[in-house]
Image (cartoon, rainbow, N blue to C red; front, top):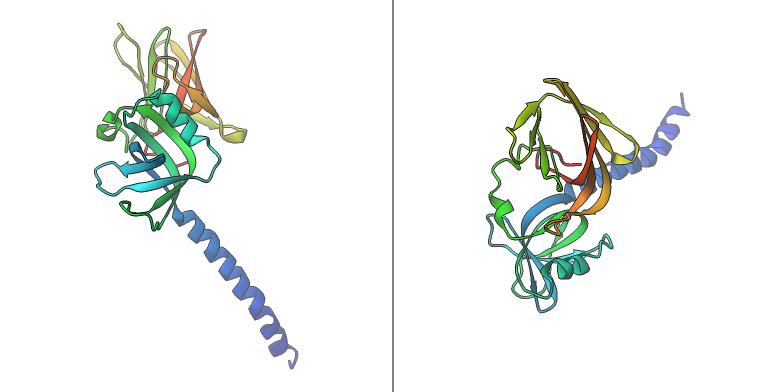
Length: 223
């Protein structure tokens, strides 16, 4: 019985260290946030103003994403504001005229214009994929997916999702006499028409025909 108390005291530092490690892991998860908003350039710095806010954050590319190069490529030498959908960590900044810094670790979307801030479907949407030649888009929600093509009525279908190694997804649907498969994979993807940047590539297989495009996660999916 005399050994029990010394043994307990020996274990206390290990127990405390484990709690501290778990707390630090939880804290790091909390710090990672996803923001959408208007991206602009001022004096060579990238600034993000989140949707429906007046605050502005200096963007710091901590993920070696080539963010500045992507912005220059989209603007083409102009100064038009961009819409950005980014993941990163908020922090303080001592630079005048800003409300902090946003250390960016992932690009979900980057595109010309700011209309995406007014997208009412984004908060509930899980995934959106689109391509061209011919044009198509697939919007995925919790209750089903919606396939849209010019000149044809929208097609709402149930689906099954399979998560694959490496972060890829496969969505399948067989209804109304049609077989649909949507494959998406984590890969830098540029829209062939607009030049918009997405964080996933997409491949739509519909009744034996293969069409390619890009995809991104909606606000209902925070992967």
